[in-house]
Length: 238
Image (cartoon, rainbow, N blue to C red):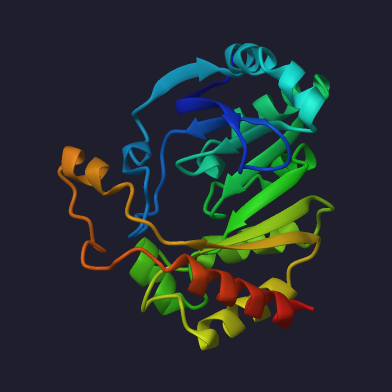
């Protein structure tokens, strides 16, 4: 019986895929994103241990909401791809029960992507930066793992949403957005692209955990400017 580690469950998610969704936050992440608002999910030995069958029972309680709204379940994190065997097992069980499946990921995992994508209806891919140096600056890691995941996406019919966090003075220039557009143009099956304004709502978690918050001197992203950049990106992709 395959067991995995989850951090928490959100029962009525409205922004994590189509319709009303149950969001399962997996425990563990190798990235140390400067703006991460869930640093409590980083520790790979934290969270609650659970079997795929036990998790399915929790998900099924909300199935009536999925069916009425066109929703389903979204597996997020942490980094959901770090527990590939457990993820595949839960995805299979969801598909056996006709539940729409989404994974919300930065593309940094343990391979087995072909099997994972076979049971995934939608991938929400969070692209952290547009070049190697920028990736290392924001996440502490290079682009190698992401590039491998992008290759796996070339061989799937799974739908994809792209998300990108816009941080003042880091990812908010038009030149940066042009480079982002060039990356997105090479990804198949992209249905939706969103730019998310950087916010500071997670800072208190860092204080509680005794972790230095690297962006403490950067103010939240102006929402109107973010909308303008999103329109600019949309125009580039048309």
